[in-house]
Amino acid sequence: MKFLFLVPVAAVLAVFLLTNVAGQTSFAVNANGHPCSDLQKNSFEGGSLYFITSKRRTETNVRAQSCRPDNTISESADQETSSELSTAVASKDIWRSAANAQAQADQAQELAKKLANPIASLISFPFQNNFDFGMGPERKGYRYTLNIQPVIPFALTKKINVISRTILPVIAQKDVVGSSGQFGLGDTIQSFFFSPNKVKPFIWGVGPQFLIPTATNQYLGTQKFGMGPTFVILKQQKGWTYGALVNHTWSVFGKDSRAAVNSTFLQPFLAYTTKNAWTFTFNTESAYDWTGDTWNVPIHFQVSKLVKMGKQPVSVGIASRCWAASGPGGPQGCGFRLVFVPLFPAK
Figure 1 (cartoon, helix red, strand yellow):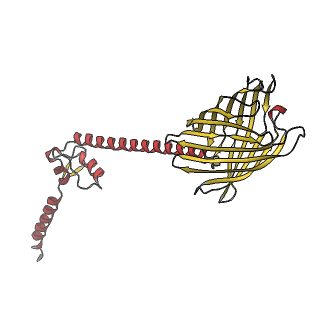
Figure 2 (figure 1 turned 180 degrees about the vertical axis):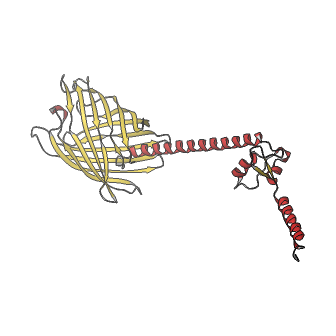
Figure 3 (figure 1 turned 180 degrees about the horizontal axis):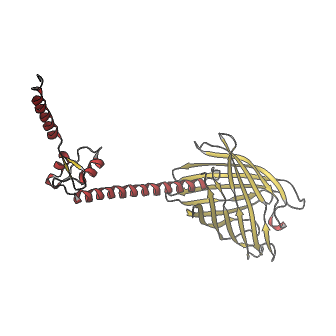
């Protein structure tokens, strides 16, 4: 009984504590049955919604949308939030689309530049169509040559790549030898370049070249097996590619009635690739026949574009093909070239 006087004291203390706590955070209940703090209710005053920290922006916004001093749902806050979210999503999508488009453009330019490099570490399968006119003894003949030219690189060591380049010609000609026509395979040229995988100060490769007598008609080939060295050197700076490919072939054995093969090939080249994967190329593919003492000098100006057919990247191009010099019965004037090159970049 002597402690009963403490009961009113405890009651007074309890009321005091509850009053202070309620003063710090008082809650209302909105129409959805969710509690609303004074902080949230006051934030609506003046018709504006304010957030205390950016870190809790989304959470506070969601909670505050449903809280007003009169316990009603704030439609304006809901619309504002939806607008902000829509704008943020749209901006992100636009940025992502622009980044993807730029990445694809950069990849296309890089592939086009690699294609301008004869010994790039890129698998390609060119189909080169050459049309020549003014041939034969009466200068009325023509020749169509489809050069099938697969290029396959592979790593020999960590520092050395080997690039296999094959040229298999399919030839159709008329009135080049007398008044007759021929169709079939020509002789195959097979080259192997051993190339360091560094690009500075320049790119180069050297190796053997073989002349393989695959011609299906005596007028379409040499009927000789030959071999010799081949060498390429080039530089790539920004969009420019310039250099030269040189080789020499001697016949080793073959049909005795046919002339010996003793030929030098010179191919200086200059190319420029734009940021949208257009490539402009100027070159010559000159050959000097030491046995016959004659030059064959076609000059090419080519325009090509890297495109995609479905998911397959390909290069398509057209070139003028004008003859500065040719041997007896060789092409005269200008022909043209069409190029179609499927590319197979590493995944």
